[in-house]
Image (cartoon, rainbow, N blue to C red; front, side, top):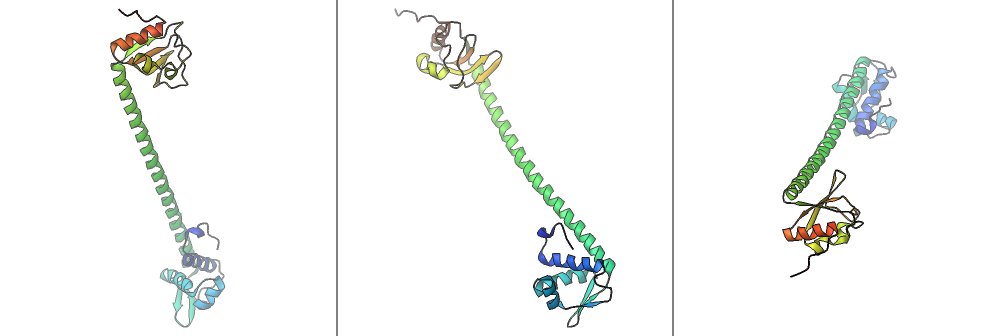
Length: 214
């Protein structure tokens, strides 16, 4: 018989199903005595030990009776059909359980990745909120020399001594702005640093000259 899960079964289980299928289809009649293990092994292309295990399965379900030195007697066509049906149902259940187990593992892995990402987001937002609580806002005015430059290109930390933690543009915050974000008029810089450094950045952002010393 053909069986959709052959690749998942032991070889002796496949042979038991093949024999039971042939009995169920009437290839072997009830009460018929068939060849011994060695001949069956040659017929199905397996070892005598494999046939022995297959016949043991069938004998346990009263499909056949193994008579030592005499051969195998076919007992019941209905028992053979029941064996095939039960085996297929059992194997189908095992297949479903394996699929379920694999899906549960995938779900658990995905949940772990989601939990990790949530923790990272919370950590990032917490750090950002702490920075905002201690930060001041500096507006980039039209005509500012900062326009068209990124925070890194303008070297604001070196020139003024402040750290730009975020840039707000048209209602959207850009945290830790990189080189791809060029400053424009109307941008609001969120900065942390000493007051004199913040004042220095504010004058730069407004395009005002530094006050004369003395």
